[in-house]
Amino acid sequence: MAYKEILLDLRNFSESEFVTKYLDVVKELSKQIDKRELLPVSEMEEKAGYNNAIVSILSLINPIYEFETEDDKNFS
Image (cartoon, one colour):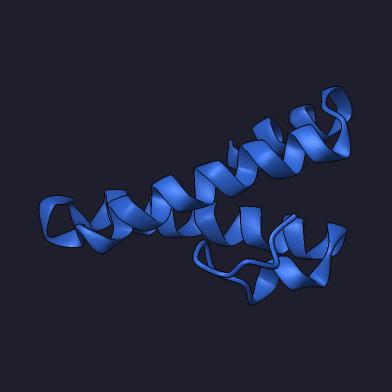
């Protein structure tokens, strides 16, 4: 389901809109995953999978997204 949503957004958003949206999603998912003790294992795995799918696609757009974190200043 995550890939379907991402593919739909790839078709409908400009590159900058897509990157902005999914960098925000990755930041939010990271916060949720960091609080893993509050989530059932299956939900945590689902969020981690969604996060990994987003990072994979963003890294195809620009390889920097595979390694940068939200605190790095090189995000554009």
